Image (cartoon, rainbow, N blue to C red):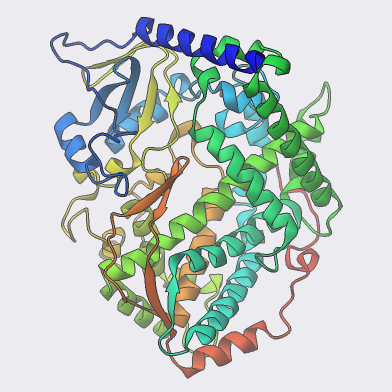
Length: 534
């Protein structure tokens, strides 16, 4: 008992000392007092069930670059405009591409300082650049079309599953819980992500591999979003497991991750057809001359990409249903567009996309209106700097405020509607084409932007097109579109109910006929293995 409690007491004492002595933030105007609370963790003034309810007021009060101190001590800078985020994370990205120290994320991956095998938290060094190089050919524009047959397959199953659910609930007046829809979207997304990475398909939510992955993801996400004492007092990482509860927990999670990720790696290597595992190994063989990339490192690199893809998109897609309550008119227009360019005798395809700009606009507006990570993943300042009169201390933590950037009047304007409203039309130009000059901050900026944003956008497009082609979303209860749950760095709508019904008798016939005899062998769906030009 004593051996377990003594390190905790020592750590607590050390933490208090550290918090009293650490203070490195400066501002050009010494009379300007730092804010008492940062925009993140604003638990004192925002309702827990509506964590973003005060953000707009916070932004107005503190301007485009907000200086803050966590606990009144730890320096923090929040970037509230696209201009500020692009300037620092893009133009000055050489000094803002590393992450703040995350001892916990290093310990649970068996890594040293700045070297977390969970590449999202790895410093931007030569190792990370290599791992990005291994993933980029699999996730970029060249490879993305390879996944479209897989995405169409999984969207077809989503429609079959939804049709079965509505029939079980009452065909013409089905009322679903958002949690049930989340499970369906989660299976759909997982099957796409695991298929493209490892050649593994998830036929149902009861699939044991799928559930094993979900279980590990939850544990890793919890550690990433909840820093422990070792993150504030790094020397604690050196305590042996015998007297360190943090080390014992970290070693246990590292072991379970390693076993799972190596299992998945071998599945990918032995799967028929093309997948990202084979592609990554081919890139590594070309570009690593002295020695091969350790299998465990490669396994973690792929697994980081998988976790990012599986966790985020289902939560993001749920906001479509909330938007349908906030502005049902866009659903009506989407139905008309799909009827005109797809018709009622077949399902949407990627070959229709050039004519379905409005569906792309809906997708972009969902990600602007309710970004999955409103505060983004933090960066670290590697030198002292100044932007718009605010001094940034070396070592300070910076956030791109995705929520605020999507409401930047200098970028989006308000000609087609209030920036707090859901208005897909803001993403269309005068000719009805999708605007490419507007930022989607949810994918990040600069060198740490999401490698898989093209793949993510493609799958969300296909899911949205399929759902809106087949179903009418009917408000049942009043839905508070600001109510959300926070998991790690991510948000999702708080639980709500919605009505969903097929748009007509033709829907069931088309869905069932398209599913009958569909090819589910991923070796055939993904095509033969061939190296993407690297």
